[in-house]
Length: 227
Image (tube, rainbow, N blue to C red):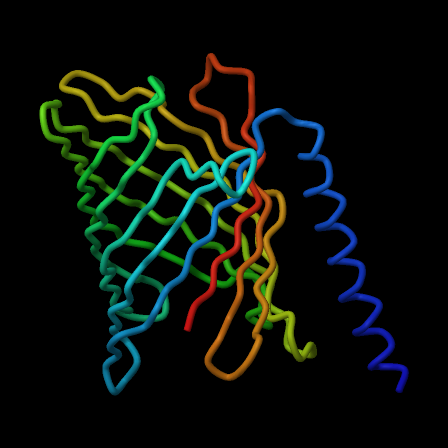
């Protein structure tokens, strides 16, 4: 009884904390909602490899203002307990700075080392390194390096809340002689829920900035469903 009360109070504390963070974005002019889904279409018998179909829609200001759409397959493989690799292709329709929507093709390859930082295997640190090639008809190809550091806290005594996470990501454009920071993303709080045996939901609040000179942040609420 006392244990259940403790879990309930602990769970409610995270929910209140998350709502507080997301409510702060209501004061910002540039609010966005990112809705995405990962549909598992194949998995190896040992569960080390899987292919998913990724879909994402980005909405700004109101539900009628769609700023971006992403669609494509993702292949990921777990080499061992400390390293994952993967690749993906995504077709993207995104609104540019001029207000017009452009069709892009994005090819991705990544590797993610990770390890637990405690003896109970509750806190995991991971560093995703992703190389991207972005092509567009009538424009030069763009190469990007994305590095995302994430700390995840796993919960073992909660029926629905499986983990919480924070992350920090730098996105750099690779040029011939140097790299240039294009985007900065910080997630102060994310939550992973297990809805059913087959459905998981990630909810996160993100601060996004275009580059180091830009002082204005986008406030983003993200929802990702995986099944």
